[in-house]
Amino acid sequence: MTLSISFYSRSFCFKFILNLGTCNNLEKPLFGAAFMPLARLREPVYDDKMAAPVASINYLKPSSREASRLMLSSTAEIPTKWNALLMQWGQFIAHDVSKTTMLNNQICASCLPEGGTCFPVMLSRLDQTVPVVKVRDVTYVIRFDKLSRTVSLTILGNDSGPSYRSLKIEKP
Image (cartoon, rainbow, N blue to C red; front, side):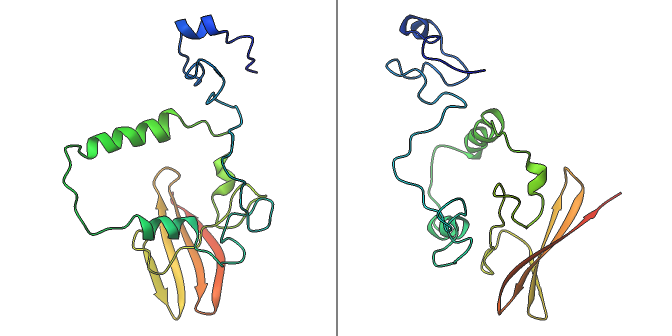
């Protein structure tokens, strides 16, 4: 379905708000609509000047996971009138209802880059959210995916540098 400005006249938007994200802005009804390109406030930054995410090639900057883990971590407990149910509702809206990905995520099931659409995110040895096992200076990350019933064992590398290898074991 191709959206056009002629379809969304000003009088149409006064009557209806559509679930495609149109008509949220009466002056420009296609701003924020599904499948429309987003305007950037800044130019994108890539490690290879084309598509590789920052810190995926040269490791001069922290990865986005590491930056958010360090900046958003806090031991302080902030009392609030909102509870975890509101947060969970927001997660449901953000991840389940509004998810409009066009990418087949099954090709991203390994820790190897897949044709520019997927890339491995280097995990820090200080990251406490993923179970990490260290045997003879080699770090392993163990994950169990309940949906696909697979166990993946990823070798992150040894102290000399990162390496990515993945092994999947399907449970019967």
